[in-house]
Length: 422
Image (cartoon, rainbow, N blue to C red; front, top):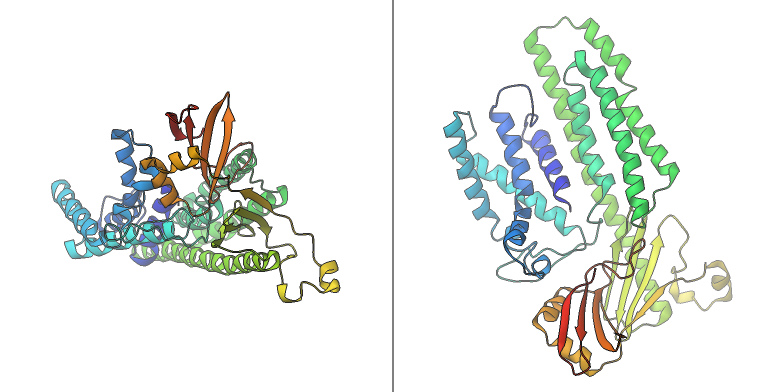
């Protein structure tokens, strides 16, 4: 999951569960704002491991270090205690009214845990048991960058801010709607550029949903503002309740979205298993991975001794992979759409491939890869060996999948160059 979404999720949890205040509220720093800041910082803290890249030139850190110690369930209590202690020190220095050390430790633990769980639902893999065990569990539920999920977590927080001050709600609502609508069109262009197009109908649907949430309540809000006669204390209590309800609504919607992802993953994985059965494949590993831009699209992968099969699926369309047991029936064959898939063959073994596999960097690559494919070719008489993980497929105009490692030899078998393919 991207770091920005982690921070948004942490802030939402603080407001919905711990009664946290807005991060940048006009009110002075208080306990509720410290709660929100602490949960949000805890939710982004695990990604601080990327700072090691600034001081290191090791290109393998992205697979050997990222999502390890700082993402560990075993190390989580230690980091929560350290961050709580640091926060208490800053609060005493700034003379802020902060929660107790014990409460802050729990808040930071929740923030860090939210990060770990939201990384687990992606397909990159997270070393949650490091340093005791360096495996990379991955639940394969949502794509690493999921704008729909980010929007579900963010929009309710903006709505809470919009309706916090009835006298400013009209201006805030119109400005927020305009900015978010433009963001949707920008995301559409970005998605088209990387090969994950979003249809105009989907863009229109999201814009209409935003309009319903931000613009339709405006007349009601203005009537409430004109009719308000209650005391300041009651008004403040009402605003707090409105803010918390919107944030609780966002947290519930986020959990429901993850629940839908579980259902979609189950359906996609069933199709992939049925494909393997129909093709009578000798399966070594199998998976259904989320494919942007929506929960409907999935990338099915089946690894065999000869290579990797890839089946891109749209769950909204009829599947040719249902009921493999009656696949030989003429009636079923005429009903099914044609089976479409890609096959990425494993290169035939040779001395250059064997030499490449002995390199320490390549051994790390093979440890990281879940659906590896080895390719071999020559350029200007020089042997080239490439290792690709089909979890990160070719998208858009890219010629090679992401996370492709290339080793160049001279004809005598000496390594001339190695590194990630551009």
